[in-house]
Length: 151
Image 1 (cartoon, helix red, strand yellow):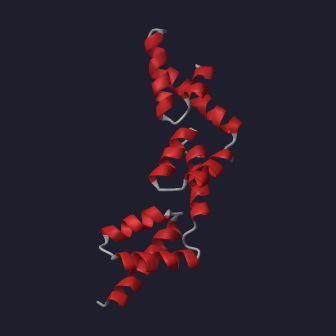
Image 2: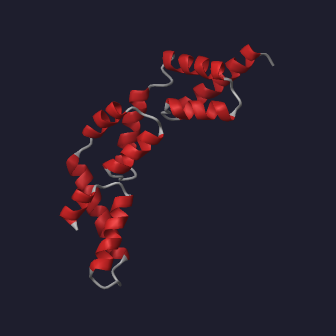
Image 3: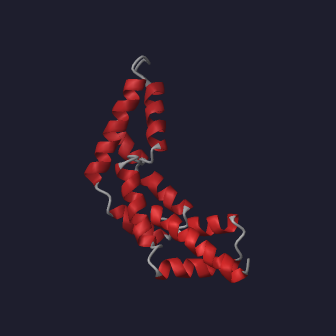
């Protein structure tokens, strides 16, 4: 197949890939490189996806933040780490995180605490149990300040 034909095939595949759910440019580049695309093909595909509105970084960030907050109930730190892994600029991340509801985040934190405490109900109260709860909450992406106010 010709280089032009391969590029067209990649565009069609990536349009389907983007239509399924919001994607980041990093995800598209990674998938294209795995398929053996050249750098020129990657740039052509990305340009096409952006101009056709299949790929929109702001839309991706908004969907990522809302999904991870509401569905996975992650804290801001873990969401930020996920966005950094997608090579999203710091300014865009901070803007998106500022839109998170503090009351919703606090409710998620309380739910995680209750869940972890119920899992540790047979363990004696003390510093070991408290440390396990704190470590668990840190892994869910909550800041130490938030956690210490609640635990």
